[in-house]
Image 1 (spheres, rainbow, N blue to C red):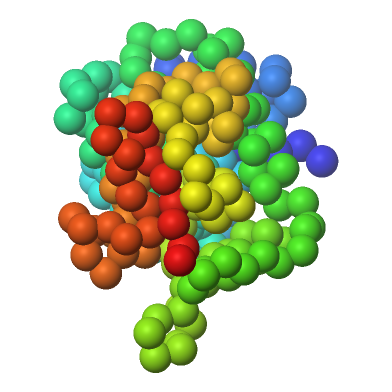
Image 2 (image 1 turned 135 degrees about the vertical axis):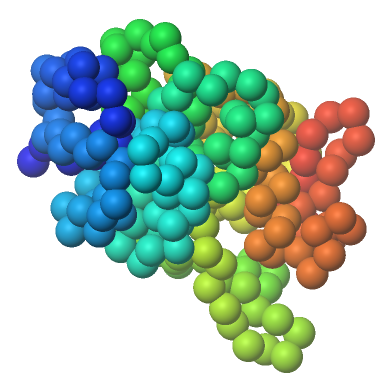
Length: 235
């Protein structure tokens, strides 16, 4: 069954170009112009991935991404930003609010299709049913793609994660005690054909810490290995 990709882009000519290339790539495509009601349309259609512009007529794509991450039906749906805003601060912001990738215009349609396929392959791999796994205060349910954390009183809560955050935390939970460089994490989590930089790892590490650490600036689980990378401890 073909995967569904929603394209939120207000430039009609560009939206048509993206739709044409994605359709040729074997996807079912829905194009939206980002006006009022876009979030509702996304919830109704429930795409497998969303391509999202930042500069939209109703609200900017960053705000729409925040809303997507707070919506039960779409919270784990991969979001790929496609925008003319190329400053590093915008790239970092896009990743911090829940984007899984950030592509700047002008762009290669072939590269866009390749990145989308890579993200969807990761989602399919992550969704494969596997046994639950627990270490320290964390419980990983791979089949449901959920992670839970127990507090000092014994109460368990679910950690809200995007698809990329889930993959990164899953990797750390199954490789505790080992130090990993940023380049190694990119290779292991994003894959050999990744299109992201080591800076991306730092952004996702910070977001994970905000989710699992009592004091994100003084982490006890996801610690920094100075001059090298990161290590995950559960003891």
